[in-house]
Length: 418
Ligand SMILES: Cc1cc2nc3c(=O)[nH]c(=O)nc-3n(C[C@H](O)[C@H](O)[C@H](O)COP(=O)(O)OP(=O)(O)OC[C@H]3O[C@@H](n4cnc5c(N)ncnc54)[C@H](O)[C@@H]3O)c2cc1C
Image 1 (cartoon, protein in one colour):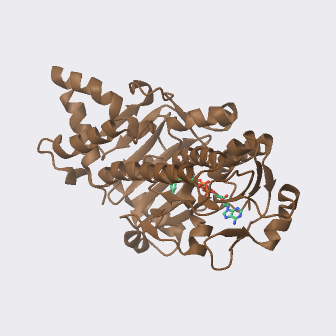
Image 2 (tube, protein in one colour):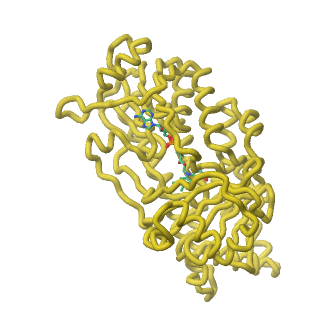
């Protein structure tokens, strides 16, 4: 990679990562074309935003609009089983400066809102699927003749200086270059639908319920609740052939869900996602970069995806404006560190250590030393739930230390996600 001045950029994908990147670049005066194919399933996951997303919404100038179509989110409720719940209130998290609330959003409206913001910033949105090609045997990327023509009003028929893959988990460039992709540890299936008549325990909170198998989210949206299950793929197959059959069967069978879903009515088809944990080993090349899910996605639990997409978009815009190899290497390392930090925390959710640690933490608060410790922990632990600086070394170390040595004989197996 050579130091260069980058003036023209083609972005493939008009989801949150692509649109946000486009906005930041256009505001810096770059000429940006964004291909947005507009192909979306009937509903899209990624509806629960962590508080650390809010500063991005403010920077993009869209917070009021998001507030108008989303629901206000004040915290997170973790359902361990039929008896025990843990409520995390964002306004009780100490320090960090992150807002003490966030939003849950219907994704179609959220994506359109970010895309419109990109348009207002000067991004030229091309409403069609864009195609990239490999430049001969090299590792460089080119716009196909058809895409170059579609972007002629932006690039004047010349290849852009830089190409960005923001295609989500479709990952165009990694496929073309056969880049190594590291799969995560889990091979889960997520089944997602919207329901009416479902109970939530705290109206403002996103709910994460540990189930007899796997876990589920309950995200309150205007007039409906988004309910998604994350199940071992082999187990999901045993529930039926179609996604609908699997979803409806398990909703009525699981003892935790059966309770709150008894009056529930599914009002959308079921959308199925599988094997989504993946990270491309290198997110930058000679004239290209990956951003958002195209670079990597960890897991739905803790709602980190959208935050990582927006963070990586902003970081990539800085690298593109700088144009030096070092800036791109810094970007690559930043995204990987971010994905790794989330993966560390998420692993502890699945193996039961995190839930055990928080339950144990609530119990020790009855003692004076427990109260003192809690004051300290409230600064570092809940960062997992607000998304504030998850890469902070001390916070990460504290979570690691406490979830390894702070369980005091409590067996994390009790809360493992099966
Ligand atoms: C089961 C599950 C649950 C999740 N829940 C949450 C959650 O609650 N909260 C959260 O923050 N995150 C969640 N996520 C993650 C979140 O959905 C993603 O991280 C986020 O959508 C990433 O945005 P993106 O822009 O990178 O990709 P995408 O949202 O996938 O956008 C990519 C866009 O590019 C378009 N496109 C693809 N190829 C082309 C092309 N060649 N030309 C033009 N356009 C193209 C696609 O149609 C799409 O519109 C969840 C993920 C999963 C799998």
